Length: 265
Image (tube, rainbow, N blue to C red):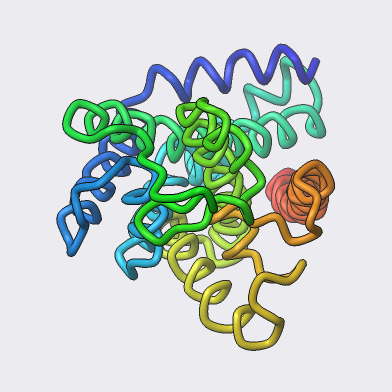
């Protein structure tokens, strides 16, 4: 039954204007970031330096643009009644959770991919300066995907980095989905991802060592190899992502179940 709901929700995502507007929004933000003090050297160096800019926070406003309000909208318009009659409540909720996460991840990923394609017309993907694998002062050895860049596959470095970047967008989308249900406010789908990223950068960066296992900005934004082993670091990133999806998904399910049962009484 979950498969049936997912098929319907993903169709709803990819045929909706908000999803494509979100992708275009991320692409536009990337272009704005590239115009602020960016030396014209190579795509990878520009990309890494760009992510230090404060305007990066705007990317996460678009991450939940496509489906962050799906549950809130269904409840406001009482669409849940017809959808649950066709299946079951648990599958319905988890389909929305997984679709929201995937939509956010793909939105961030696709917007960056468009930027990489455009930027590669004017700049090489990578220009190594020396035998220490640095490009424009950026050391690639501390990155989970640095191996690809150092062995002639810079496009894979960019693609995989964008996917990991998108995972954070997916997590923040689920946070906004939960809080929009609690506050009954659809604007949370746009505001909360930005507030969540600000919290990660401002507070987690202060409370925990930079480049450590709780420095989510380093993990998700820069794919930092925090364990000194790329595979272990990637496994940790995916483990943290899965745990966040499970915890947030269960909290969302509990809230939706409570509201639906309350309306049914």
